[in-house]
Image 1 (cartoon, rainbow, N blue to C red):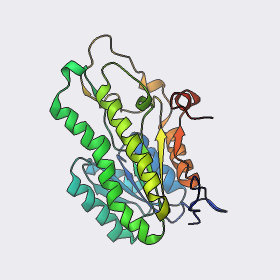
Image 2: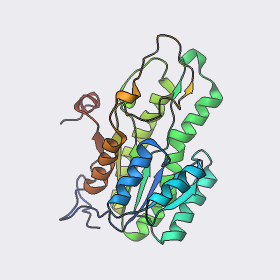
Image 3: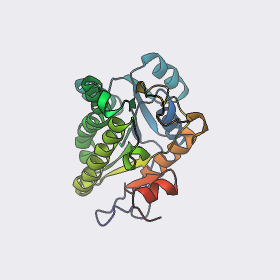
Length: 257
């Protein structure tokens, strides 16, 4: 695939190819995941689409030539491993993983329910880690691969009512950067995408019930999910560590433009 093992994992001579390569996209039934799966398929990739909704995946798969629908709940770790195994068995290789599945939770610190806290961290942090663990040996044996984790601009913010969600995304940030350093020798490139407000059902699907006075988020006015999907494809092609939806997030992260 043409990776250089030095420096910031710059690609040598050519970008990672998408056409005819195999990618797993989690949370692919709607929003950013769906748009990413479509964008990859449009570029000629073979896409395995993972989500909890089997019916939605079957419908999506019919629109994506060569795709594979795999029903999987990312909080069920054995099922995540089985799903990755099914993808490998079907295609014989795995070139990329896009960890997109995630969920928000709105509650004050005083009102956090431990069971929901546990579920959010299983989905937003441990699920991506388990998926990474499952694909890493395959990618290593192939000589490299691309892992893209969808994070959130809230990883750099303090927002009342959203401490659980933002802290889960800060944890994902730490694991992603560490994995990037650890896997450099194996030519496995780990990148992160930081969307801002995105026009999806994410806000509607959040758990909890924010109190009056909590921040009002107009998701319908946000970036299109296709825009975030374009950042995912850019990350696969270029292999840099972090990609931001706008300069405001980049500045909040302390990253030079």
